[in-house]
Image 1 (cartoon, helix red, strand yellow):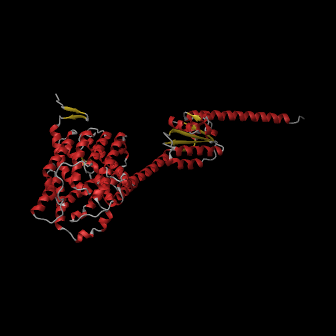
Image 2: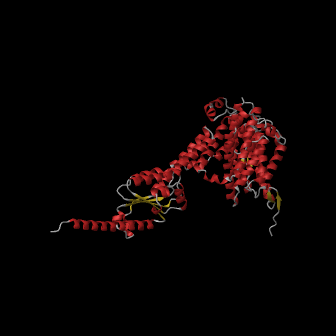
Image 3: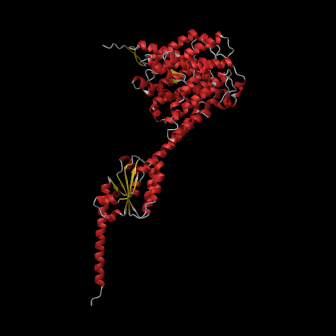
Amino acid sequence: MNNVKQQQTILGSFDFSHLKGDLLGGLTGAIIALPMGLAFGIQSGLGAEAGLYTAIILAIIAAFIGGTKTLLSDPTGPMTIVSATVVSGALVAVNNDLTTAAPIIMATFVLAGIFQIIFGFMGLAKLVKFMPYPVVSGFMGGIGVIIIILQLFPLMGHASPKGMLNILGNIHTPMLHLNKDALLLGLGTIALIYTIPLLHKKLPSILLALIGMTLLSIAIPMEVPRIGEIPSGIPAFQLETLFSLEWQHLSMILAPAITLAALGTIDTLLTSTVADSLTKTKHDGNKELKGQGLGNLVVALFGGIPGAGATMGTVTNIRTGGKTNLSGIFKGIALLIIVLGLGHYVQFIPMAVLAGILVTIGIGIIDVKGLKLLPKVPKSDALILIVTLLVTVFDNLLDAVALGTMIAFIIFMKKMSDAALKANKFGLLGDFLQQKGLPKELAQNVYIKHLEGPLFFGFADDFKTRTERIEGVEVVVMHLDHVPFMDETGILVLQEAIIMLEDKGMDVYLTGLQQEVEERLRIVGIIPHYIQEKEVFRNLDECMIYLADQYQCQHIQGAIDNLFEEALKHQRQPTT
């Protein structure tokens, strides 16, 4: 009998039946999070402790409330890059005074958490699946490139200037004043991270590289920049900082807060999907967003940086036995104990070692598989990926995603238009009418437009152009049984087409209208003002029978009129 132990709390139930696996997964996750938290904290501009606070607090809160059982939350590359932009922007606004910039930074991070919570309550998690893959691949690749470029100066023993163009434009400076010890440590760190898994896959390569290269730098005294002393106690609650925000700075926080919230949503839910595939479970995306949002909000109030679900930590957690959300709680607690016990030794870690770690993380973020497929994928997809990547690197993430998505939308509309154009059938009824046993003369005077797919703005212009070309017939039948909807542009163009055809002396009939389409046409008045009720038919057959009856009636009436006219002529002739 399966003895499952569960503890019910106000936040939900906790499953203690996998306690050993959750403990091991959480401890392993903490070991991985330590060097990454330090590295991302330094990268953000707020110091190593900011990354550690996030790795501790966010992990615990997201595990308590989130909707992905095995997800481990940490500072991540994408979130750190945007956070660093927020920090640098705030510093520029207040003349590089971090104390004055702190309220702006904290308010932005708090608002980002609030937005994520709102996203969760609005059920926006499902929208992530509509993000085009080339856009995701492009901005993730761009973030990876940014992380790598930002490490070029630290790898050579120098502090990095702000901005991609500044770094690339001044790359000769550290080369001319190269710190060979720093370069040795950085390259050695990269080599160890990639070599250790070849020897033993379960060894924490990042942590071992961090410890090994730090000890080397101490054993062989090296003159290299180091992290320096960081607070080793429990982080302090800093709510008073938020209340120091000045009104003129409010305009600075909205856009980056939305960017962080959206990016955190994408980053987390992509990781949740990876966790689902490994555990054969299904996460609750909206619940996860609420947990991540609350976690990021609280983290900001303790001086941390926004984070998200971390793929590396999550996968390691699962592979080492983590089964439930307890693993995330254990990870946060374990990391807190490590920091409290070993925080004093963090100051000796060389900056070049952290740079080496971040280079490998940047490489891991880049979608190498997607880049390899560039020559094989459609040119439109390649264009989206490249544009998104470049704009991410040289402008900002929000513009990159907006531009990439807009290009993807335009290309999608073009493809939809082309597909609709190919699917639609236009022409005289000829064979169809003759198969129905209808008069041949009628076939020569009836033109059918069989539309496939939605009549929307992307196809409207082609529809109008083809309709304008119709000449030499008396009747036009628009068969709309495969038109699921019409947008405002489509309805307007349909109305214009009907008016134009009737001005040419043609009768227009509609057949096969789906319920939603017919309702829209009645609401806007196309039926009955432009198309009478008698000109609307459920299917094409009914319309053809009606036209045939009309033809026969007109033919008979014409014959009667001819006979009557002949009789009148005969009566008028003089008798001899």
